[in-house]
Length: 54
Image (cartoon, rainbow, N blue to C red; front, side, top):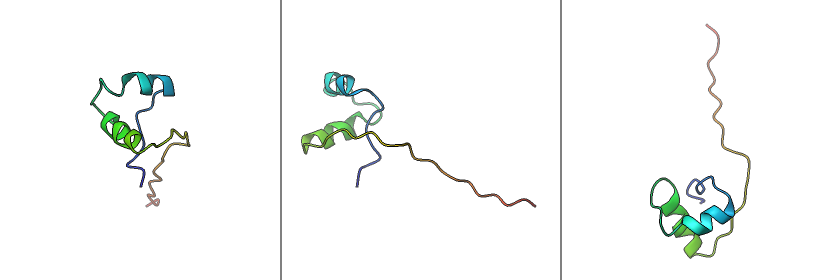
C-alpha cells in the first residue's frame, strides 16, 4: 500500500526538506524513506462522479 503518495515536490526539494517539515504528506515521505523507498512519478488519481440525467 502506498499510503497515498508523497508531497508533490521535485526530488531535490524532498531530500533537502524532509527533516524540517511535518505538515501534509511529509511524515508519510519520511516513513517511506526509512524503508528505502524510491520516488516514482505516476498520473494523478481521479474520481469519476456518475450522475445520470433526470
